[in-house]
Image (cartoon, rainbow, N blue to C red; front, side, top):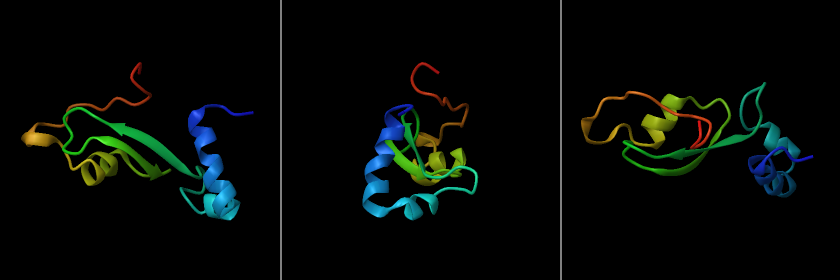
Length: 83
């Protein structure tokens, strides 16, 4: 049974690279990757896929380039556009 599209998106990588590869990505308790949509006041917007265990700070500041135009970091919304 497939829980959601993100689960389905993991299947090609597992079939191509094997289950050992998938088990080597992420943390001991959470294997694999997570997709984030970066939008709003970050310097670099877009879709990113990171290993499970990557912090939101890393996603926003290292990958997203931080908050654009010297604005202050106020909040982050997770869970999709509906919250």
